[in-house]
Length: 198
Length: 260
Image 1: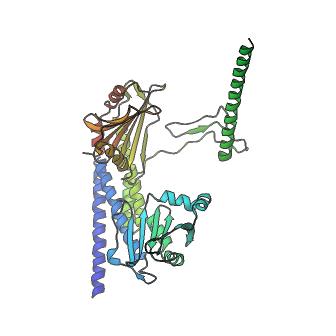
Image 2: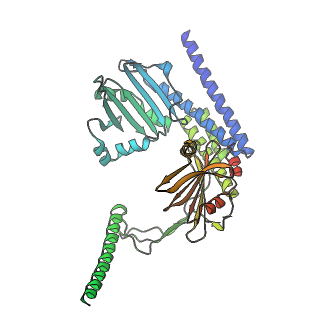
Image 3: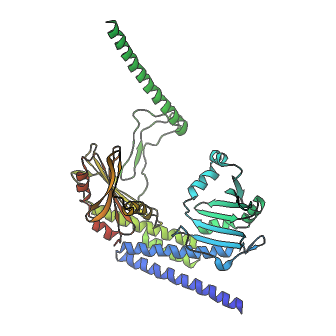
């Protein structure tokens, strides 16, 4: 019975999204035809947001339900907000404090250029490489691994940043080690995300 | 007499040294250019791009590969808005959201280019005796909407005086300018000289700056997300700059951008 309600809930959400897209599409078409270019543009911006939401939902379906012993907090999944007010934004948390993993997938992040420069430039990557930062590969994608030791607790936290063309995947995990975070990174379907988010 | 001879000789040596130094620097610069570009520059090199997009390059590459001397450039056709909206709908129904988004972005690009061209047409042909620079009009759009549409028009007198008018639909720039306007400070002075101050252009609050190397810059936030920037090179005074800025119909541009 619960499954039926869940399916109905998802279908309702999908239908509502489709209706919004269709509505904005009609507005874009009629505004453009009548020469109201600014309103046409506004409607298209709304269409882009609808599409980002749809893509975000597809990505959430692809993400692992669990990372190691940390289960996904599906109720806290976030498809909007953050500093990138326009563009794809997907956030999912795993586990609970004090041991938690946070996964973020953002389109057109302002960090892309700087991270891309470090992972793609051997000289720069080498210069930046130290005990706390290095360039590694996750499923063949060059990635930046940052380590941070909490001076109060003595615990080691890691952040993995994986640039995929114009999408940035960031995985943060506290109280962990390099093997564990790279293992979690390898459980993310990066190729599929790269394909759908571009 | 001896002192005069020594002085003349010293001056001559200094001149020779300066010339040698200049040559040395020029050679060093050329060497660096060769390292990075692989091309050796000749003094007669010139390349230009006209408004039709045709680029000609008269340089000769010393490696023996042919250099491009002709070409049709790129076809500057804006994206077909209606076709892209149709494509977006088809892709959405097939659940190809990435494809659909690409089509919507192309459609938005097309619309923004049309808006940009309309605004350019509404700008005057001449401002304060400066004529519009043919072929320099620019409309830039990324198709991401919020990131911005930028429109540029240049005016000059064919010599050293130039006015650049930029219309930007860019929320990031707006934040920077609004910061000046709301900071409460009226002006900034360095060494007794005023570098920027608040002013008004056709009733709109604005910031005017002056820099010895770049000239005047007048920034006028318009509505919620647009900004007009006037850059005046070799304008004689602030008044002259303000007179030029007042020639632009800000309200008309506001309306075309959908600003209130």
